[in-house]
Image (cartoon, rainbow, N blue to C red):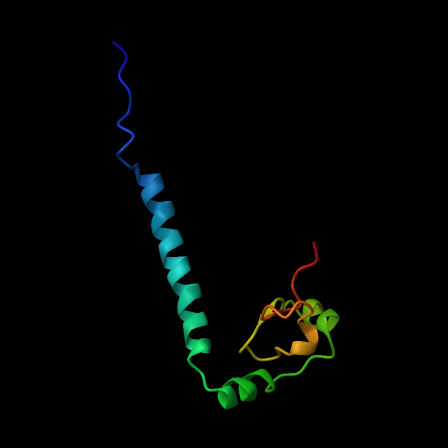
Length: 90
């Protein structure tokens, strides 16, 4: 009779992958929550602390994309208004 691996158990590789995803997701989410908790005045001060001529300059410096609340973000560089300026080109 053939023996099959119990599909309910995880190997070390799967555990490592899930742990990395959890840590990365928590790190990314914590940054977004911190930005969301800023007052409009604080957010504006951060966004205007750095200015760029446009997305070409941002991409040349390797700073793309820029999210709302981050230094250098401006609605004039966010074509679709989703809070992400200078999104990667398809």
